[in-house]
Image (cartoon, rainbow, N blue to C red):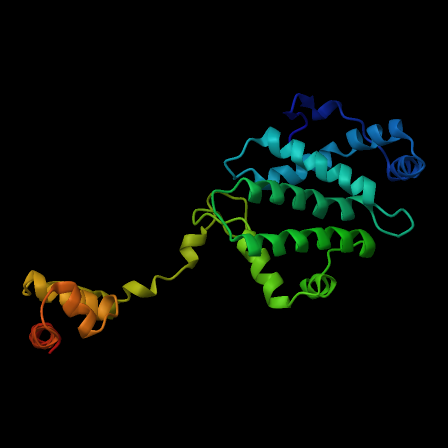
Length: 257
C-alpha cells in the first residue's frame, strides 16, 4: 500500500494512528456510549478497511463504493465487538468487513439465485454474524446449520449459490499478474484426442445423411424422444421412423469401422 491513497475523498496518509493501548481505551469509551471516541476509532481503522478493499481490486467495481461498504462492516464490527474477550479487534473486524463487501457484490450480481436458496443464504449470513459476535471467531457451517435447525447440505448449497463467481483469468495463489490463471488449471475433458476424432467422424457422417434422417437422429439420440414422439414431430409413421433411423445409423457406423 502506498503512503498516500485518496478514496472517497479521504487522504489515508492523514488518518490518525493509534497504538494498541489507545485503541483499547477508545473501545472502552465506545462501550460507555462515547460517540466522539467512536468517530476517532473509525478514522483510526480506515486503513484496515482499505487493506481489505484492495483484495477486491481485480473486480470491475467502483473502489469508492467498496470502501464505503467496508466502512459499514467496520461500524458493525465496532458495535458487536466484545471487549471482555481476549481477541484483537482487527482479527474480529476483517471477516465482518469482508462479509459486508461480499454481500454487496452478491446483491449487485447479474447472476440470479432461486428465492428459497437466497432466503436460506441470508439467514445463514445473519447466523454467521450473530455466532461470530458470540464466539469471537468465524463459525463453522455445522454450527450455522445447527443454529438455523437446517440440514448442513442445504446451508452449504445456499451459500455456494450466492458466492461470487471467479474469473477464469484470475491469477491463482498470487496477486502477480504473470501468475498462472484459473483457466490453466482446468482440463477440457470434452476435447480429449479420442473424443475430438469421434466428433470429426460424426460430423463427416452427418454430411452423408438427408435432412430428415439428421432430424430423426437429433430427436432420438440428442433430445431423447421415442420413435412415436419422433413420428409425430416429423409427420411420418413410426415404422418409417424406425426404417430411416436404422439406415442413418448404418451410414454413421461406417465412419467408425
